[in-house]
Length: 77
Image (cartoon, rainbow, N blue to C red; front, side, top):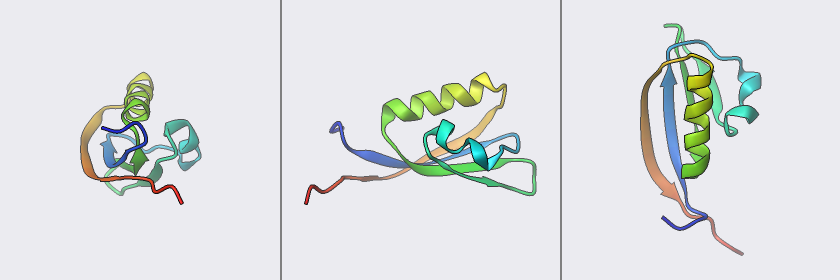
């Protein structure tokens, strides 16, 4: 993967997270669900994804699932 290529990820965790943690979690959008889970989604590079997963685990929160979407390749205009 080129160094500047970003993938879109959707991560579901088994807890409700405060949307104020978005910046700490790689800038992901945080959407709390009615079933006491949270969906986080947005564009990340692999290194940031690993950091986000580690931070979620450090909180003691289980990752229920995660999905990768099509990559975003930045254009240089």
